[in-house]
Length: 247
Image (cartoon, rainbow, N blue to C red; front, side, top):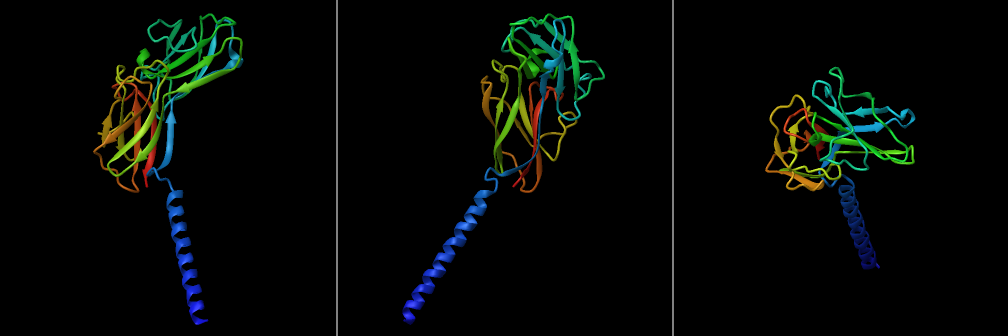
């Protein structure tokens, strides 16, 4: 009888131990196994005010990264009759933002011709050239509905000596040829007033959707960092940014 009690107790202790181990493993797996905690994500965005579409005007609203002085940084608006950006062709309208324009606002494109049964695409560039287009808004033919797209980045994994992420640009965009690059900075950095990065890199090809990585760096646990994606060589040409803390 005593032996049976001992055997029962041993089995109970073993079962309890297994439950504790499984509970611990589940607790570890339920945290962000990719090695980071997201603090903030910002990207540029452009929208068409469909209620204000008329025969010769188009009202747009835009949002860019924090602290962007879009007028002084020569940000611009573009408009084509198309469903996707025709990169090599002259737009029906190109407009620099006013010098006092800031990180967000609205603008009405005038002296244009908006026809029914015709698709249009409006775009936002963080400079005065087509290579820095980072957000677009579509006005579909035969519809008042419109959709938006933008340059986006998504962290995949953060380790002690590297990070990886996925980026997406506009269809037909050429990230390598257009001089795109990315970097990671210590702390909550600003794209427009930054110090040397911990590390940086650039796209390996012209695919508009791909993974990027920054290797041979040191990322300390518990510290905050900023990943920024640029569509051109200048620091004013920032398109998206992620602030994260290393787990």
